[in-house]
Image 1: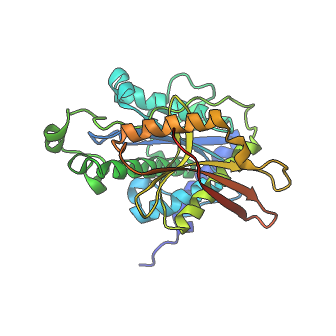
Image 2 (image 1 turned 120 degrees about the horizontal axis):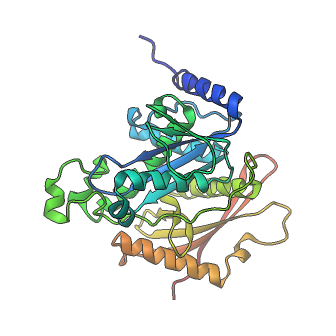
Image 3 (image 1 turned 60 degrees about the vertical axis):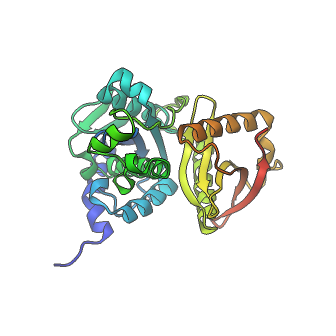
Length: 336
């Protein structure tokens, strides 16, 4: 039997999205990862795909290999019109229960998009309360809609990367490639049996809403600049742990690990090529303090306070050719 191509796999999902788009215009897909495992955070993603820049191979993330998910993740981040990834922490899960916490995370992910959609498609049989735009549940939506499938991949890969990082600190608990336990024995031996026994990141701050269907060009350019910077680091041998890491103190654009084990917290600044300002000039003392405080939270929550760290600034400039010029200022500032 002939193996289907990525385009053939995604064709029914994109056809479904085309029908939705014809009725509603701009819409977002939403999905989660991590409700099943006993350990670790719940991760929620919202995504608005660009119909002019399809990502072939999108499907239910559970049906894809880890290698395939990772490759698709990078393409989605680069090509999507907008996306938002939210981690739901243990305090929220314990307070609201896993279902309500997940619904709240979905609402925050949608509200944090740089484009306000006319409709939200949610994987499953229910929708979050309190959304400011219409929403529809789609049972098995990650295998039905390309937008929900893309959100599924963003959530799954983001959570897996986070859990693999924790695995270095708690090998019996986070269970390596399992990225979240489904058995209670290791948890009983090492920590209380609760869904989020290992501390996850904090929830992101809500972004201001735009008029429906309106694109924030500056934010979109910033996202693509961050993706370009991440690719640059990866070509140098660094591994991307997570991006757009939010805390109450602020946000870190990229968190990476160098081959020598150094954790890198990178602020990405993107500017037009004809701008007179240097991107790094925008990282003032107040911004540095917020990044350092957020990094301290990350190190404490992942029990890596003794790890070597470095604070970089990545200057990214889009070129007429469609490529990006990336300049990394290593050790741009230090924690005092």
